[in-house]
Length: 212
Length: 183
Image 1 (cartoon, rainbow over the protein chains, first blue to last red):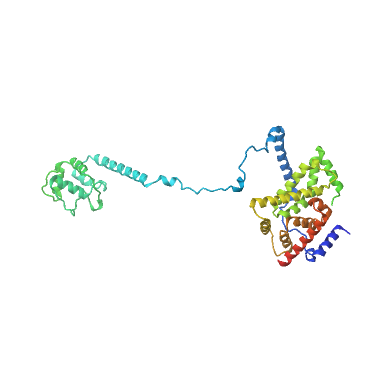
Image 2: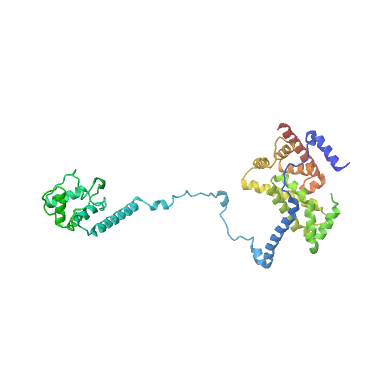
């Protein structure tokens, strides 16, 4: 009796159901796997033998390879717990605190003020027409009507109507921020009295005292 | 099957340095498919089977120089394959810190991911049923059912008596039948 028949009979005697099953294995393999297996195996053997060759060059090193001088406490790996540190907030975010931001803002304001003063101080041309023309060149941020009115009142008792069309110093399109009186004095000092008087006559202010 | 005389000749040629590579090539080509499928049915994934198969033949290469010619070559190679397969499964178990039941489930999951898997087909049901078996029973069933290995040769490979192997095979077949009928 052949071996295969014997094994098949044994199987049938245990389970006819299993004996009737197909014996094929359903797993798939890559195409050409067995054809290339030997080549890959020999490559691996070659690599491993070169490691062995190194060991043959230095038997001392080879003999030391598996010897570990270090010891660890008993049960170390059984009780080892790895705690993952909580992620820290990036340092980058802390750089821009309000304090630092305020300092930079203050410095920018000071630079802007110094630039405005420099710009105004360098204005030399004082003719009425030029004055009338330059009023639009005065940066709106440099002079406020209240500040100028206050100055003029303090100096010569001139009162200004807030609603007056005060083209010299400000227009509706030129709403201004405060500027100190010393700057106004400086501005007006550069303008001859005659020019101021002439302008005021032209604009209906009548007799006024010199502003200088 | 190629007569054992060829195996004796191959071992003799391997021990001759000048003929070693040629002899080893012949041994690999003779046994690679049988050993591969034996391993594949144990570990399921092709890549895992390829790794184990390479390990088997590397061990064969390293051990053939001292191989005693009174033993059968293919029995010896099969024994290496069984040990390497079991070692692989043991390593997987340790890495994942899982029990035997979990490794069975893990192998089932691997099977579900295989290309062409169809749990309604009988051949896939058979493979699934095999994963329910304890490792030794699975080995016995594999060697007897697929490779039609005589119990005497199986005894040398698994270092187990013929009687125990027959009982193991009987239980394995019954469990597989029960699984297939109930799924």
